Amino acid sequence: MPLTAPYQLDALQALLQQEGSQYIAQHAGLTLHSHFQPIFSFAHRRVVGHEGLMRAWTPIGKAMSPAHVFASAGSEAELVTLDRLSRLLHARNFCTLSEQMGDPPHWLFLNAEPNAFAHAGQYGRFFPELLGRLGLAPERVVVEVLETAIENHRALTRAVDYFRDIGCLIAIDDFGAGHSNVDRVWRLRPDIVKLDRTLITDATRNHDARLILPGLVSLVHEAGALVLAEGVETENEALLALEADCDLIQGYYFARPAPGLWHSEPSQPLFETLWDNFNARMRLEIEHNQQQLAPYCAAILKGAARLTEAEGFAAAAQAFMNEPAAIRCFLLDVNGRQVGANLHNPTREQRVTPRFSPLDDARGAVWSRRQYFRQAMKRFGELQISRPYLSIVGEAQCVTLSLGLMLNGVPHVLCGDIQWHGPVEFDSGDGSVLE
Image (tube, rainbow, N blue to C red; front, side):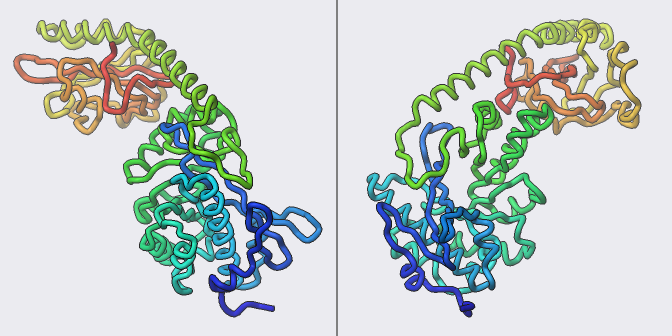
């Protein structure tokens, strides 16, 4: 019989029945179960939440995916009913299992069916009533929304505000997949952003994707959200998520969905091994980078000393430009304005295509916004090393060495660009000095 309005809480609770230590639900001939996949904190090395996942079976015992279950809804009212039933089932099981474990302060992540989510606040106060009946604090619930599936921006914002006003946390799911838009992170102000699995897997295969991933994580952090890497299946993927500074992690490498909940103790030895491997990898990369950069650092320091002795810029920079990966050397004044032209490595110029030639002449260009300039002025007299980036005056990834020095009693910054191919992990993000 078609539904004319979504079922309310009492009617939905009547669809639940206890089976062993769990509750199951019946809907349209299907039997619905709850599975939970743990979510871990890298720093804490333990479970901090569980995502509730639907498992559905037909009367003959055939499994049906949640997507097919929701697609079978014949009306908006039935879709909302099914969404409510799913949330009730997971929340009821989560509370029961939590109580058996001594009620650890875990989050419960609940997926919201996009079309039902868009109508969340239009059918009364169902969800706060559900939480009140179960004694589940709203701040322990994270409502996940697949924002790309909701085209009505106004309805999406209204629904997010509805759950936030209740006291729940908001998570954007599958960010980075399909048509995800960064502007929705600013507009929806989620508490957690779940990175789509493809961002991590691409980073394992593609050097450029690996370089971009930490910047994307940093962007989300600057928007005020935690970052969760989902779908992690291998140790290498976990290490890349750790390198990129993700806060939370979820995936088969750590635990598969199961009917029960995980305990809160640190997960040994998995995280110990992961952190040991990460730290060992970082130490090797730091040593490699220091060895690779050492001659360039020595050369730029030598050039700075010669400049302070009133030697000409070209002669002072010659030692740096003689190094094989040196691209250019340039001098900035106290305001970040370039003094004179770039000094290029002539052997490298022969191999550069003219695609960026309109940017070649950098005389008078202002680079005060660049981190390498700001850090050199902040830590005047200490050699700074930038993270890799694409210079506006070239088409190769480079690292910039920068050093604040006094010339004729006036502060300047001497800079040298090096072409870079390997990962760089010696910079904490605010500039660092090579020891």
